[in-house]
Image 1 (cartoon, rainbow, N blue to C red):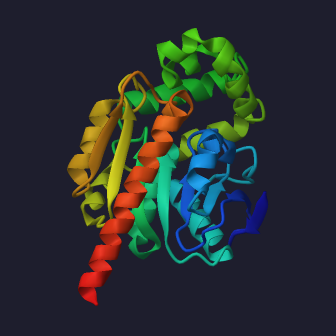
Image 2 (cartoon, helix red, strand yellow; image 1 turned 180 degrees about the horizontal axis):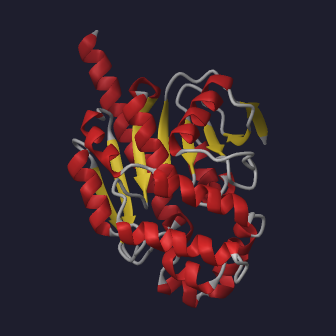
Length: 277
């Protein structure tokens, strides 16, 4: 793991693998998770790319010292890119990381070659904010651990839950280091994000793919379809039989979809460059 100090003094951790610095991928995880969440795609993604998986502040690798916004997480990503001398990258964002990816592509468009948005949304639905606040209240009252059955039901589809002997060791490894206070700080950052931001998504002008699980109840298929309405030319892929945790539930299929979208973006960008020349 590497670290970098950002402008407000916070230390951000990130992991690197692969070797092709000419075509890097930035990987942004969701609520409570860290860079290990993309571990099952590690081999696939590293063949032709340098991968930078960032631990957002509020995750185990980058504990936050004060409250923050999703815009602050976006500036953290930029600082990591600067530290690695990366001017632009393909950006993959899952869940909360998908919102950060949307901000990055909208506010800093020259830093993004393509977008892959996984299990995420562009709308701040009241029901979802209320759900996250319920999680926060229960956790702050210490009535449960971060990984409990009720939260799992929102994250993992029934097919994988039935195979709990396979999944639970992975999930427990990813969740066991989560600090409840840090988790709740990320919840607050998500809930404070303005629903009006989606009106800016029409400015995104990079190849974009949106991936969603057919059984996702936290960010359902309708949210993915809405993203495709706001982002011009976005392509939707539904991974059947998976839910919100699709990168763990169907790691190979999701990894291949990631790479397919990135390769299409590279081909399109190369063709556009040739036309300009």
